[in-house]
Length: 439
Image (cartoon, rainbow, N blue to C red):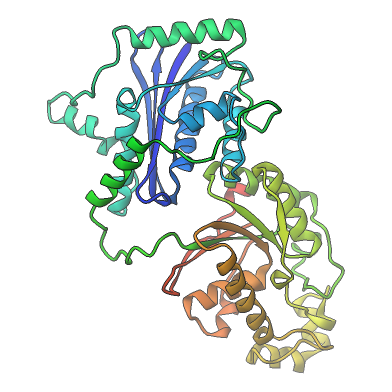
């Protein structure tokens, strides 16, 4: 059976701030580096970045050999103690990441060891390279790695301070012994990444003064990329998830808040599961808020179960009430209510037949809900599980686009979009309306 050493690190220049991770997989017997990974994450905390580094390292090791045993070494006391089961995981950011890490290899095939920061130089360098790349508006790649560039120039990469002689072999020996005994190298219980009776209460934050000081120095040393806004702190970030398909979705029928309130179809539930997996891999969601309708609450529940979070319900996120048009196709409305439809298409103040809700009224409701949620979740990343019209409206308002732009947007079932709201009131929109990963 092969044995791997995974070394991982992550950092945030601001905590939260621009963040990145690095991970290295090496052969436990020879010390040979087998795989490197690094990524710029955008705005995140130190702890999220560290967990993302752990995930990247474990995934890389699994790709190399899913039957291997793995010994993880990190300078994050928090991650090591939580993954070893000695500290409870209380923070909602950490729970889904720890759960995801525990699923990569079978229980008992991964052991954890804390190491001093000076013995984690390789992963630390990769994390800083990823953050530097992000500051340039790029993503890290192996071709831009310091070690790779040095090799191409004919020079060896400058090594960090070496560990004790035989460090890799010693780590492997400890891993073998621990696995055989069913314990971690620190004589703690097997990894249990969740709250368990008897574990120690610890804050979900890295309190190492040395690491905090290093991150602060790095933040001061990095120049802002071109067109970067002033540093106003972390924005309130809304990740907008449209619910999965219902039986009405493929038929393109009006389905608002005044109709039959359909549940998800089998396809819709599968889409929600895939969206949950994607969000778990990203590891940035801190809270979930859903529309009160059945299809959104079901979608939110599937995601929440994967991320280990609770779901709050906000009535302001409900879909528009389409009145007498509920359940009809566009062609059927054109045939039955042609004048009302023409008026609706021409003016945001026009209501659907039978006293439905105008787009102007919807926009007023969504704007009020947006402002309330921005105040409630300042500086946090929140998943809003809602519908076509609320999502389009949030994007339209963020862009300052006219009401008719609603008819020029396409929003697939279970698709994702992101709007970040900064302290000066200016939003930033990112459209991720690609659901190929959900098929």
